[in-house]
Length: 201
Image 1 (cartoon, rainbow, N blue to C red):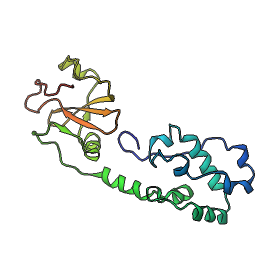
Image 2 (image 1 turned 120 degrees about the vertical axis):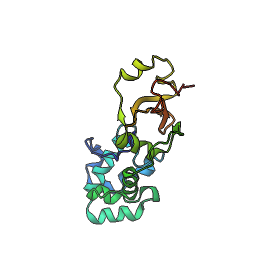
Image 3 (image 1 turned 90 degrees about the horizontal axis):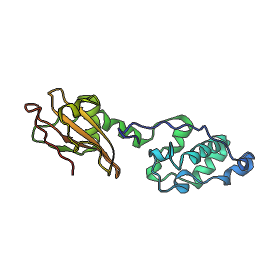
Image 4 (image 1 turned 60 degrees about the vertical axis):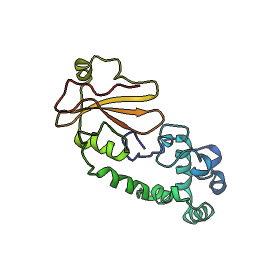
């Protein structure tokens, strides 16, 4: 999934290997995705922009080129594990898998708004909903203009940092750690906009 949890769209603009050109070889030519790359979960960006992208596209072409009876034999030989349930239907018709439907439901919210007592929010879907539906992104110069501090920028263990404001005027710092996840840290309270409450380690 993307940083903000959007369900990725997969395409197959890759080359079909020469050994797959002969349909008679197709039923034995390619292992399913979860066998070839067991380290890449379905929905990961690794299937779109990483080391699994080429194989995803090749496998999709291979699977769709099979005759119906060949597909059925393939399904029987390689039943979908729980984490890949719905893959064959998705490839054939675009039907969203169960995990994607559940993911969309969680993204829809609504979630509790931040209380003045909260200084940090880490629950993934709540963070995504807050920055998409409740907060507005601050301009690139707004934060350094108010707080010219070296302790607000990106740390070595962070992939990205963005700043957001609530309608009540409170400011927040969104961190995307390289280890994964999302973290919202409060910068200010709505009744004290010039008092900085956050200082990164």
